[in-house]
Image: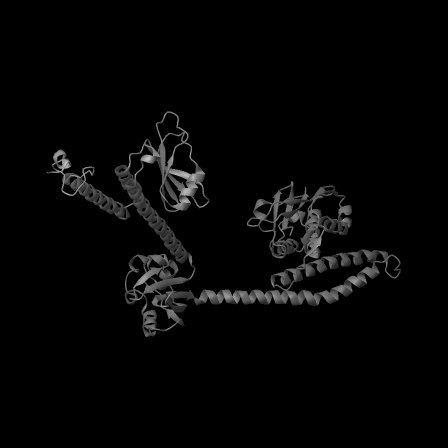
Length: 553
């Protein structure tokens, strides 16, 4: 007797309980086919994503990437954001309403994790049937946002896998583009540096092919740059230099020599169409090395015009001799001048009855001119020692207003003789500043003395101080000293000259006694000693104002 179940389900296989649901053979085949189809789609998509690296431009890569996105998921709106080095986001390309608000903290989190994220939209967007947002990071600087109508729960593992592939490949494309741009900029910077070097330079690869050559080298060697790079150096450079380079061993280090290059009777356009004379040049040849393994990649050849460098050296030697001579002369003048000043002051005393009255006027002139000569000697010695680095600048905490006041007291006689009005606008919030006290006093005295010289009788001088902002490139507050007068003024073309040595630029009719060194000394003290700056503003017949700005600390 057959089992009752067999009668009810005669197609059931033997040994299988009637409650078991058998999978038809056709359904199993369908599952296998679906898996194969999904695998093929996955492989095909991965190949398309890998092809992004072959894009001709970054824009074409973005266009291809957007087409691949549409194969994975149907999105309503898209926004591609760029994050700069300071962490600020800005849109590069987008198709979305302007009223979409972006959660920057969420975007930062996605950029840090570098993972595809699917987020539900909690707050409905007005007029839009949107339910989820996908954040797709592309490396460290780009982020794509996709707004979807489907729920976040409906996002499948297959879609996540495909988008992760797309995210990684697009990040690699953007990183490659970023490094390529940096490399191109570095190459352009190096080329610009080589072009700007004032000495001749060209480089060879390991096959003796000229890679780069700057204008100075081309001009010195009489070469046309257009036909020089990319060829063997034997074909273009003068034979004396080529022969010297041929004699160098392959493993030699840096080598130097001097040679005379013959002039060119048929000048190239590089010479401006004029014949050139022979010139003595210094040649330095050194190997290019790879820092990692010291493998020699080629050679660099440096060409120097020795005639010019020798002339510069000679000028420097002459300048040093001039400074030494000036220092010696002024030092030797000081001793006899001290005696002259002492005797003239003795003869000027009222109780000295041995000097006739009419002679005292001459003695006063001798004393006055002696004082001017003493001032010249002091300034000349100061400027020479400062530029020679022979002056010690000793800083200390001082009240600048007190130093300025003492400097003005020493000039009271000149102010009184011209009946000048002096106004003091000294800031009371400066406190003690880090100053070279004696030198700062010298600057204040020189600036006020100049104002006295070039002021009309009965004029006005204003001396002011204030706390100012930092100098360019620093963060330290500064002290600004200003000395203003309403005297003869300075012509605009002379404003840049007045801080030079022995510069006296006033008109002959207004000429006053001076050495032309006082402002040069001030410039040296302020710029070299205090690391500050000094400048002037002026208008003819309306007066001048001199500013000295130095760091407080």
